[in-house]
Length: 193
Image (cartoon, rainbow, N blue to C red; front, top):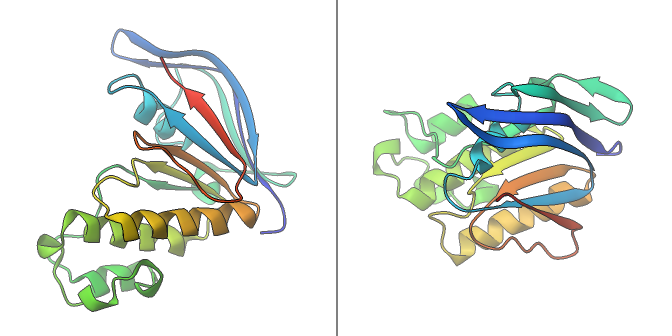
């Protein structure tokens, strides 16, 4: 990526039910950068990520996405990886990947291409989901607990892809209970309390 990706939140409020999770948040993030979103269970990390991804509307305020000087829509700018993997039931991993034009090699899943989604381990399903994210080639990645269920090689693989994405000018927002450490990548922390 030549042009940096930018995500801007202006006076954003996020409310779920009767509870205010985020109030008046203003933040501008430009790639290359990784933002690590921290906080306890139920504090609003996923709600914030979904709002940043354009999947939920803020109760107040504005969220915008851009690539260089060009304002983009959320679907054009953002690739979102939820905490739960999303393998298509009944398909083999290779068939699911092919539908998304995703490559299983960068996520070390070629040996499992013929395994049906129901038989994938949690880590294998997470790798398949990450292959789909890679295929989107979107400038902004938003990842909810991407390390959960992965072994050390899986966590290292995610870190390597995050590094490549951010160094290429991309922006990544990652909610994780485990520390996010990606070598040579500017990282900022946002702690929700």
